[in-house]
Image (cartoon, one colour):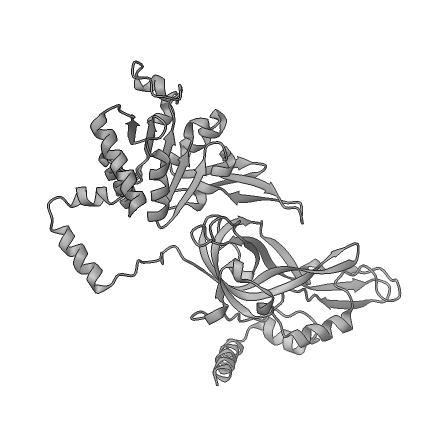
Length: 459
């Protein structure tokens, strides 16, 4: 029923086109059927409920091969847009005859049976330079038909990957009007057919197949961030809490409830999670709305623990440490593709955390060279790359919360703050809030902390 309606709709479009009398279409019908005509093709995409075929890249297993799937993920790398040949036209000066060859690679979503017959009749997909009698052929490039092709890699979202496991990724082939719709860091949903192709080495296959998705449509998920599901009782409680005078203190205390004290730090974390108001003034000045926080202080003052709690609360938070991350790992890297040898862009942690929070622990252990990479992100909120012939600017609108130990290990009370922290002023000026967390030797405070710790273990 549905197919019949679709056929009629496309047929009507064709008839309308014919009434308009496209000269190239009428000429194409009279000419040789094999000759490539510039007739319009209609591409159909399906959206909606995919049931068990709606998955992340981790769920792409062998039971979904050659099925229509819908995959959610984040774009980590993209290749350049290249034209791919579909039909080539050749002419032989000796025999004065022409030759038309159609190419059917594994990314064509044509009828599979039709593919098989074409493969059988045409043999291989090599570009012909001689005909069957070894006469040289010249290619008529003006008559050849091409299509745009681009390969992007989609990785599962950081928040949906199981903890302690590497995130999986899958290659997506975009063709025709789908190219250049995505850029690294975008959260997308891709509909397409899950295909396999044999990996050949020296003409031998070892039975292991390379998998990819041939896309039929892409949609951006930026606008549809997951809304929290609230019951009626939750909304009543929120309204009741909003009427209280000390609501800010209550909310501040409920951030990291297992940690005693530090109310000012907790309140600032709460404000950072809510975010400020981003402003673009009429004269074009951009004022960032994200709040950056820095915590410096003695060991064992629960700095790392506060970062862990942000990871649990924030809908999108990426955790790194100063020792384990390089400057390009935080911003963006230009890599060489091992299959094709061409360069492409890979997004780093701060680009993937666009509209989220980046937690950097052990901030003082970072190299100075790597630390410079963060300067631009924290103030301009973009990552600009000019390497190896790739010039681009990526969005990185994220808040940064960093924890660091002082230079001497312990905080030296007799030295000023700048001497203790030992970070350049250019970086400190980008942090809106700077907290010095001291381990005060006060019996009353120690008793409170001890009680809180024991209570945590008891209940």
